[in-house]
Image (cartoon, rainbow, N blue to C red; front, side, top):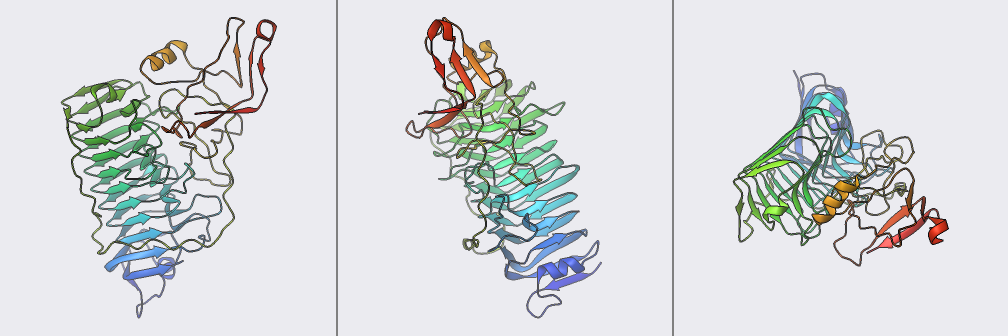
Length: 450
């Protein structure tokens, strides 16, 4: 094992040169300070260690690999590093792009990137995050998040602070096992969607967290479990001893939306801003809930012990604009905040359409629109519960001769609780029975609903 030093008067002047020279087992010790456009790819099993404080890795241009400030291809430990300013032409820039292995991040900070950390899939891999902060990540397009983990073996988050994501989720995990403990997750005044999204289910444990849904949240569901059509076998969700604060003024607000067949367990929760009917949508056993008259204070300090708060990242130099998201030709939902998956053009990493609030979403696979068919009984149950769904079949919707009116009331990830904000709903074809009603909706028309 060798210790490679980086900084003024050290063995290496740049992080990238030290990482390139490293071998398995080495420690790259980096003097605290700002390293601008010092991009690196980790191919050796190493530790990156900040020495004397926080190492600020700042991007003002697009990373040359089109991915991230730091790209990891194998086991790595990163301590006392901050990442900011990552932006690339396809809109998927990240502070760190994980591409495999076992990644451990401690005492670190990800802010003002298109994605804080973006993960490729590695079912045998793991990501562990402790004493770290993720905030103000997201390009504002609904595709990008504070943290987005693909299909890996396990994600563990402890004693960390996630807040103020821009339209995306605070935490999104497709890991087969997700454990989040003793962490503070808050929208603040931002426009985040889900606080925690586990779209494929998996084995999930959420314990001892303080979760705050802000007044500007773009989705009334706080925790989302399953619902994207590929739930992992044997999925389970246990939520214990969490504190939940809801500041979103909406009767559709829910602590949990469970779209798997597994019964979630929610125990020992302290709640402010939700009533008993708003604790769970979907199968759940709820017990030991305490309803608070006022919102409890939460520690909003950075858990990373790197000294003073970081300055905002410099604005990235202009790059070609990311491609616009392709609007869906069908809008379907199965529960509040449901979504389909999609990808940014040219990006091999997992991305999704969720909260594709400003431009719609891309189809899940192959460019062919896939549409769910709603069950009328289930839709009626949603309606009676104050929630709404749209039944669609194929790329067409038809009404028989008895129909005089069609009412669409839908809730997407881009949900706007301001009635003036409106949403676009696109039809390929939609018509009443022409012989009885003589009415038809022109194909490929857009309709705006408040």
